[in-house]
Length: 154
Image (cartoon, rainbow, N blue to C red; front, side, top):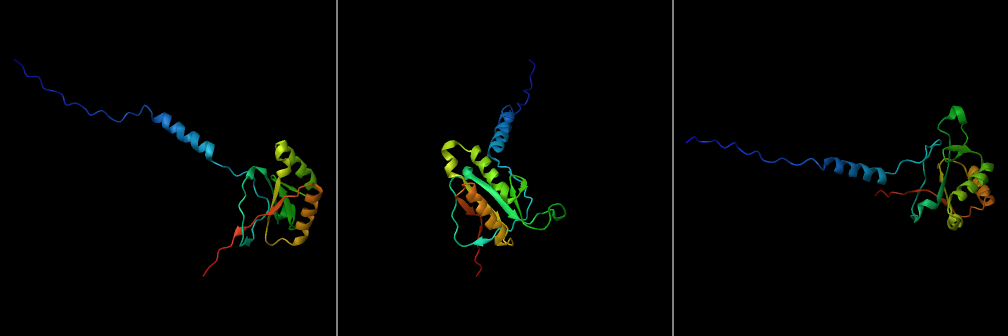
Protein backbone atom coordinates (compact mmCIF):
# COMPACT_ATOMS: atom_id res chain seq x y z
CA UNK A 1 0.00 0.00 0.00
CA UNK A 2 1.25 3.44 -0.92
CA UNK A 3 1.46 6.17 1.58
CA UNK A 4 -0.03 9.46 0.66
CA UNK A 5 1.57 12.56 1.99
CA UNK A 6 -0.86 15.10 3.32
CA UNK A 7 -0.39 18.51 1.91
CA UNK A 8 -0.09 21.11 4.61
CA UNK A 9 -3.31 23.08 4.83
CA UNK A 10 -2.87 26.78 4.23
CA UNK A 11 -4.41 28.99 6.86
CA UNK A 12 -7.23 30.99 5.34
CA UNK A 13 -6.20 34.66 5.02
CA UNK A 14 -8.21 37.66 6.04
CA UNK A 15 -11.04 38.22 3.61
CA UNK A 16 -10.69 41.48 1.72
CA UNK A 17 -14.08 41.28 0.06
CA UNK A 18 -15.55 43.95 2.37
CA UNK A 19 -12.57 46.29 2.10
CA UNK A 20 -14.03 48.45 -0.72
CA UNK A 21 -17.23 48.87 1.31
CA UNK A 22 -15.27 50.08 4.31
CA UNK A 23 -13.21 52.47 2.21
CA UNK A 24 -16.31 54.01 0.63
CA UNK A 25 -18.03 54.34 4.00
CA UNK A 26 -15.01 56.24 5.36
CA UNK A 27 -14.84 58.39 2.25
CA UNK A 28 -18.54 59.21 2.51
CA UNK A 29 -18.21 59.99 6.22
CA UNK A 30 -15.38 62.47 5.67
CA UNK A 31 -17.11 64.08 2.71
CA UNK A 32 -20.22 64.71 4.79
CA UNK A 33 -18.51 65.95 7.95
CA UNK A 34 -15.77 68.11 6.44
CA UNK A 35 -16.43 71.84 6.48
CA UNK A 36 -14.71 73.72 3.73
CA UNK A 37 -13.75 77.35 4.03
CA UNK A 38 -16.64 79.33 2.61
CA UNK A 39 -14.86 82.56 1.78
CA UNK A 40 -11.41 83.69 0.75
CA UNK A 41 -10.36 86.68 2.80
CA UNK A 42 -9.43 89.69 0.72
CA UNK A 43 -8.75 91.89 3.77
CA UNK A 44 -6.30 91.54 6.65
CA UNK A 45 -7.77 90.11 9.83
CA UNK A 46 -6.19 90.52 13.25
CA UNK A 47 -9.22 90.00 15.44
CA UNK A 48 -9.13 91.83 18.81
CA UNK A 49 -9.16 89.90 22.07
CA UNK A 50 -11.79 90.11 24.78
CA UNK A 51 -12.32 88.69 28.23
CA UNK A 52 -16.04 87.86 28.09
CA UNK A 53 -17.25 85.82 25.14
CA UNK A 54 -20.59 84.28 24.34
CA UNK A 55 -20.89 81.35 21.96
CA UNK A 56 -23.61 81.44 19.32
CA UNK A 57 -26.25 78.73 19.11
CA UNK A 58 -27.40 78.79 15.48
CA UNK A 59 -24.64 79.69 13.05
CA UNK A 60 -26.85 79.26 9.97
CA UNK A 61 -28.53 82.60 10.72
CA UNK A 62 -25.23 84.52 10.69
CA UNK A 63 -23.95 86.59 7.79
CA UNK A 64 -20.37 87.83 7.94
CA UNK A 65 -18.87 91.21 7.08
CA UNK A 66 -15.08 91.53 7.18
CA UNK A 67 -13.49 94.95 7.57
CA UNK A 68 -9.77 95.54 7.21
CA UNK A 69 -6.99 96.74 4.99
CA UNK A 70 -6.91 94.95 1.63
CA UNK A 71 -4.30 92.24 1.17
CA UNK A 72 -3.70 93.40 -2.41
CA UNK A 73 -2.74 97.02 -1.71
CA UNK A 74 -1.77 97.73 -5.32
CA UNK A 75 -5.22 96.84 -6.63
CA UNK A 76 -7.53 98.02 -3.84
CA UNK A 77 -5.54 100.74 -2.07
CA UNK A 78 -4.52 100.93 1.57
CA UNK A 79 -7.75 102.23 3.14
CA UNK A 80 -9.91 99.76 5.10
CA UNK A 81 -12.44 97.95 2.91
CA UNK A 82 -15.58 95.92 3.56
CA UNK A 83 -15.78 92.33 2.32
CA UNK A 84 -19.04 90.41 1.98
CA UNK A 85 -19.20 86.98 0.32
CA UNK A 86 -15.82 87.09 -1.47
CA UNK A 87 -16.53 90.58 -2.84
CA UNK A 88 -15.32 93.96 -1.67
CA UNK A 89 -18.25 96.36 -1.31
CA UNK A 90 -18.75 99.96 -0.23
CA UNK A 91 -20.86 101.12 2.71
CA UNK A 92 -23.91 102.13 0.61
CA UNK A 93 -24.05 98.61 -0.89
CA UNK A 94 -24.60 97.06 2.57
CA UNK A 95 -28.37 97.65 2.39
CA UNK A 96 -28.62 95.64 -0.84
CA UNK A 97 -26.33 92.93 0.59
CA UNK A 98 -28.41 92.72 3.77
CA UNK A 99 -31.61 92.29 1.78
CA UNK A 100 -30.04 89.55 -0.35
CA UNK A 101 -28.79 87.69 2.73
CA UNK A 102 -32.20 87.97 4.38
CA UNK A 103 -33.91 86.60 1.25
CA UNK A 104 -31.71 83.47 1.41
CA UNK A 105 -33.16 82.55 4.81
CA UNK A 106 -36.45 80.86 5.50
CA UNK A 107 -39.29 83.32 6.06
CA UNK A 108 -39.64 82.37 9.73
CA UNK A 109 -35.92 83.01 10.35
CA UNK A 110 -35.59 86.34 8.56
CA UNK A 111 -36.11 88.36 11.72
CA UNK A 112 -33.41 86.34 13.48
CA UNK A 113 -30.65 87.13 10.96
CA UNK A 114 -27.48 88.23 12.72
CA UNK A 115 -24.64 90.15 11.10
CA UNK A 116 -21.20 89.31 12.45
CA UNK A 117 -18.59 92.03 12.03
CA UNK A 118 -15.07 90.67 11.91
CA UNK A 119 -13.04 93.83 12.13
CA UNK A 120 -9.26 94.12 12.05
CA UNK A 121 -8.05 95.61 15.33
CA UNK A 122 -6.12 98.37 13.50
CA UNK A 123 -9.21 99.77 11.72
CA UNK A 124 -10.39 103.16 12.98
CA UNK A 125 -13.98 103.66 14.16
CA UNK A 126 -15.08 105.71 11.10
CA UNK A 127 -15.65 102.79 8.68
CA UNK A 128 -17.24 100.74 11.46
CA UNK A 129 -19.67 103.57 12.22
CA UNK A 130 -20.58 103.80 8.52
CA UNK A 131 -21.28 100.06 8.45
CA UNK A 132 -23.45 100.32 11.59
CA UNK A 133 -25.49 103.13 10.02
CA UNK A 134 -26.05 101.17 6.82
CA UNK A 135 -27.02 98.06 8.80
CA UNK A 136 -29.66 100.14 10.60
CA UNK A 137 -30.94 101.30 7.20
CA UNK A 138 -31.08 97.66 6.08
CA UNK A 139 -33.09 96.80 9.24
CA UNK A 140 -30.35 94.43 10.40
CA UNK A 141 -30.65 95.08 14.12
CA UNK A 142 -28.84 92.00 15.42
CA UNK A 143 -25.13 92.79 15.14
CA UNK A 144 -22.26 91.06 16.89
CA UNK A 145 -18.58 91.82 16.97
CA UNK A 146 -16.26 88.84 16.61
CA UNK A 147 -13.29 88.53 18.92
CA UNK A 148 -10.91 85.91 20.22
CA UNK A 149 -10.49 84.85 23.80
CA UNK A 150 -7.81 86.68 25.73
CA UNK A 151 -5.21 84.34 27.14
CA UNK A 152 -3.93 85.34 30.53
CA UNK A 153 -0.25 84.72 31.12
CA UNK A 154 1.06 84.50 34.65
